[in-house]
Image 1 (cartoon, rainbow over the protein chains, first blue to last red):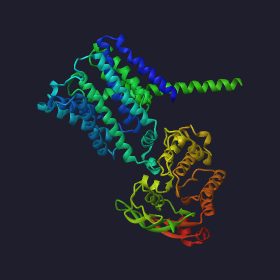
Image 2: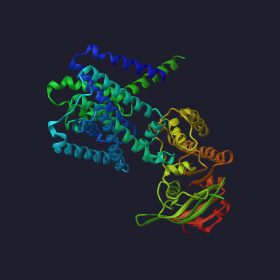
Image 3: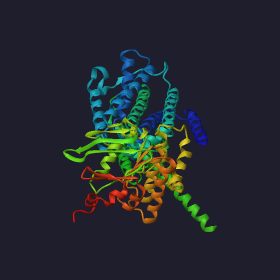
Image 4: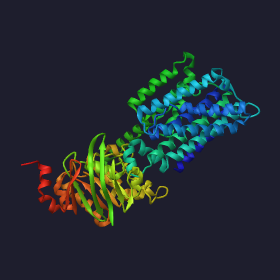
Amino acid sequence: MKDKRVYAAVVVALACLLPLGLDEYKLHVVINSLFYVMMASSWNLLAGYTGQVSFAHAAFAGIGAYTSGILSVKAGFNPWAGILIGMAMAGLVGFLVGVLCLKMGGIYLSLTTLGFSEILRIIITNEYEITRGTMGLQVPALMPVYSKTIYFYIMLGAAVLSLIVIYKMIYSDTGLNFRAVQNDEKAAASLGVNVVRVRVMAFTVSSVLAGMAGGFYGHYLLLITPEIPSLDQQFLVLSMAVIGGLGSFVGPIVGAFTLEVLAEYIRGYGQYHVLVFGLVALAMARFSPRGVMGLISDYKRRRNQSLVAAVESKG
Amino acid sequence: MALLQCAGLSKRFGGVPALQDVSFSLNKGEIVGLIGPNGAGKTTLFNLVAGAIKPTEGRVFLKEVDITGLPAHRICRSGIGRTFQITRPFAELTCLENVGVAIINRSSKLKGEGWRGKGMEYLEQVGLLENAQTRGGDLNLIAKKKLEMARALASNPELLLLDEVLGGLNTQEIGQAVSIIKRLRDALGISLLWIEHIMGAIMGAADRIIVLEQGRKLLEGTPAEVVRDERAIKAYLGED
């Protein structure tokens, strides 16, 4: 436990040095990655720990971004306050969708959330007066003088905050309840787990975190488009979490960085990266359901076993 | 005062009656056996008591408090534990975590990581100590049954519902399991409502037997009375 904290502190400290060595473009890629870290990790909390494979996670980021954006543009709110309200809004809608999906599992929940996501995107695209549709809504920056470096630190702070919340949850009694519900709802209920509460809580918390990610991201891009709550975005986030490793804390972080950086590299060959990632995620889900992190832990276990066997055969 | 009292319990699935007007009570410290041919409604009765399904008619009382229709997790917290006939381990959780789920959700909560030490005690009671770090899905059938028991015990029940825990065990293992079950009552004061097909075992251990047939209570009595009863013999072996 202590060791892990030290590791995390070192990683964050090293990350703080990044702006020194990166040009504007590379810094932009890293900021994008931090957005995806928040998205993939909070989606993992819902899908990887309670088994609710929601396709509405990008939609909740959209709710966060548009709530904050519209409030600051139309009502003159401070963007920081806007982000907070956006998080609350995403949480509220997440709560309602969670309640709606209570009796659903598997594909039904996925289809319902997919439908919700599309409805939201269509509304945003068509409510031109309020959202500026596909033209995008120009929103104010989080600081008086635009600085990518400061944005990097803000996004890093938001990502760390988000990850702390997720870590605290999954390594607590709540996390154990989450996994119990994911494994077997009936058995969990028979042992005193309030399944309704667990499911709705996971939906609400992950939606608040998605709302926060969307809010900050919108005020970084300065232009909010229906691209944020789109299914493309959703499947990218899904791929990151699945390839990195569902049900693992580190997996989605690794997945987010790897795929975002990779996407930038292969951008030159056209917009095929989402397709490629989707296929890789599909293969992963089939052959290594716990993603890259699962492969690593399996490898470690096998190596330990063969070490033990070697020691035993000698002794 | 009866620990558990069921009054006129009925359950219909669609139009099909699975259980009709079943009443009985169970006193503190009693082991009551529930027997009957397949499809008699034994597991349905369990599910009604444990809150997995709601009765069409009738009430369930625990220590004279009406618990009819409460959700399963609240019935568990009020003091009724259960095992499942077809074992339902949390496949991706270790045995210790499986038991931990029960400990962290019972009314007498243990703070922080306290459940780990306590969990080991429950695993030891059923002989699963060496499997503490094995995932539930990787256990063999007997170990899965033991895990069911350990989990149910860890929820700290006053009344434990056992659904065919002996199925699939050999003679020697049955002997061990029965002595574990008797010890639950004698040492821990847990009352038991126990569905079992292995007559030798349940007739030896139970204080009273309830026979169900086609969703109705056929008769109730001491094991000695039940084995001599014509109706019970017919229910099991058919006419002639």
